[in-house]
Image (cartoon, rainbow, N blue to C red; front, side, top):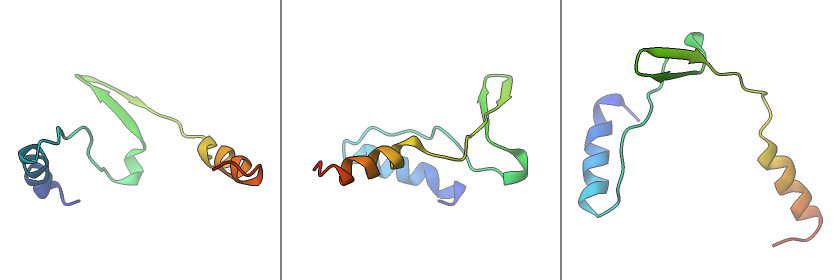
Length: 65
């Protein structure tokens, strides 16, 4: 989403009774994945693999619905 439209989306959702808020922003990938709280910034590491998908695949193989 374009940053300048984020507030309008939040307003539209809130007007329909859907509580929402802006909680993050997209930055250039060169900056890495960071969590910023107040004046603190720390680099987050990602393993590159989302464990959800291997669990999902196993469940499908076992016939779970």
